[in-house]
Image (cartoon, rainbow, N blue to C red; front, side, top):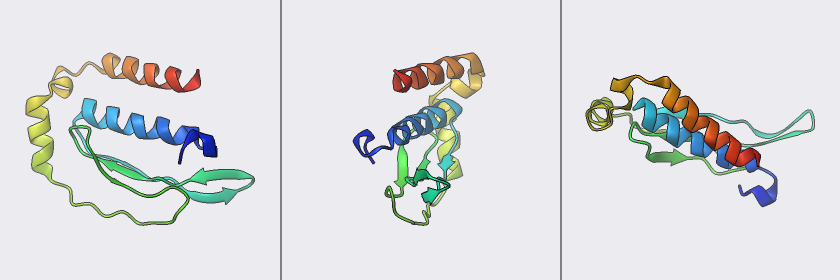
Length: 107
């Protein structure tokens, strides 16, 4: 859902999913509620990112859907060979990248 429709946080969560999966070289699964509760709107848009930061599956906004995705553990090993982020184990780099993303969407 676009920011114009009132779900600006959807783009932020999606961007963070890609960044976190790439930096941690792990699968990231995000599950969001759909609909309205106590006057709050929940967009849905659950997603699954692979260990190299690639979007593998995404549920539509404002629609109930169960996502299924095969998980290839060898992909984790390959991502960790190629991307040294996890091997370097410098969480301050991840933290600063996430802060930049959040600041960009807060402005």
